[in-house]
Length: 128
Length: 69
Image 1 (cartoon, rainbow over the protein chains, first blue to last red):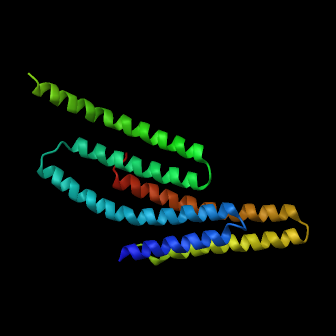
Image 2 (spheres, rainbow over the protein chains, first blue to last red):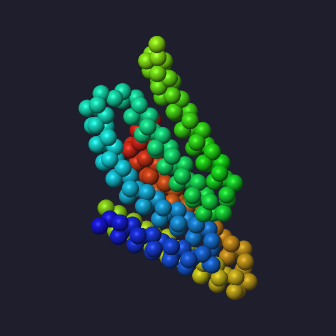
Image 3 (cartoon, chains in turn blue, brown):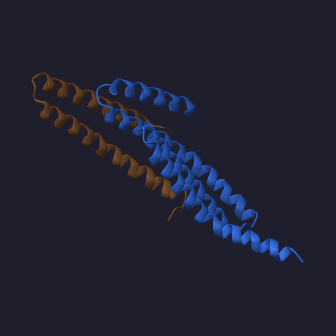
């Protein structure tokens, strides 16, 4: 199963990072970034499969495709922001990690505003 | 599939790291500290090159999956 490979890669990456850390911390950090990238790349195939199914369901339910693509973008931004923030935190730079997370939240908010407007308009139409 | 190539690259990077650390230790032992620093820097740059390629690949894939412009 894939989870075994992921855990294996994670363990090997962790041990190699520990091997290299005392000698040169920078390379150990880059190694952990590399392992993170590989695991994330592997997950992307699974995510795109799930999103394809979601899109089919949305079409059957006649949902406005704009909403779904915005939600996909929001999830993508959340993923990348969390990925970057955790790597930067790994390097010991907590303040930069928080700034990255803040940027992710702001960008998600920017994307969410049109959806909020659409919801408000539908609600106002429903009210007498 | 995580693929065997990903684990190869992880081992390559670790190997470069250990090698560079050993070489810089040798340089330090013959009191050529600046050479030691240069070798460590070179090792970090090589690994950074690999990492940047992989990050570029990852972001291209993310852009495709999440339909981000």
